[in-house]
Length: 121
Image 1 (spheres, helix red, strand yellow):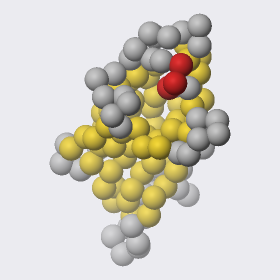
Image 2: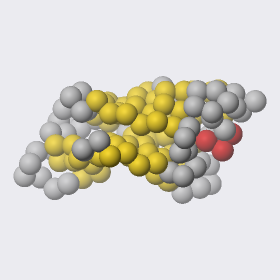
Image 3: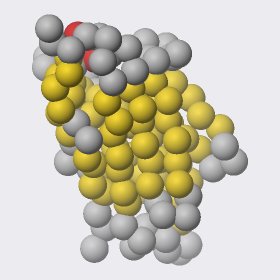
Image 4: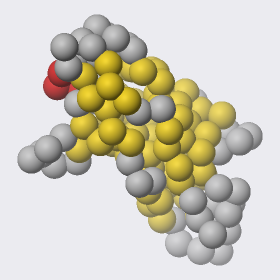
């Protein structure tokens, strides 16, 4: 069974920090990238950061310099360190994994259930 499980969300004041974690089950045998998206109320889901095989990372301009993505390829885990949080960072954060169940299955995007991040005074 494929599972993508996020943890680490919560409430914090502006300027604070949070660290999100996401673990993908070993049933995703081939992983090409892992990353984070977010969706604020009334807005479309947007990409936050992605860690691609080979060490390439990319970030949404809105979080550059404040958020850092890191990945543990051995354990199929990805982290998002969020510093200097702003109220506009408030959203549900979703982990996504792009990969294959096995080398003969199609490339697929797998999603977690999301974790709430709230930034308010």
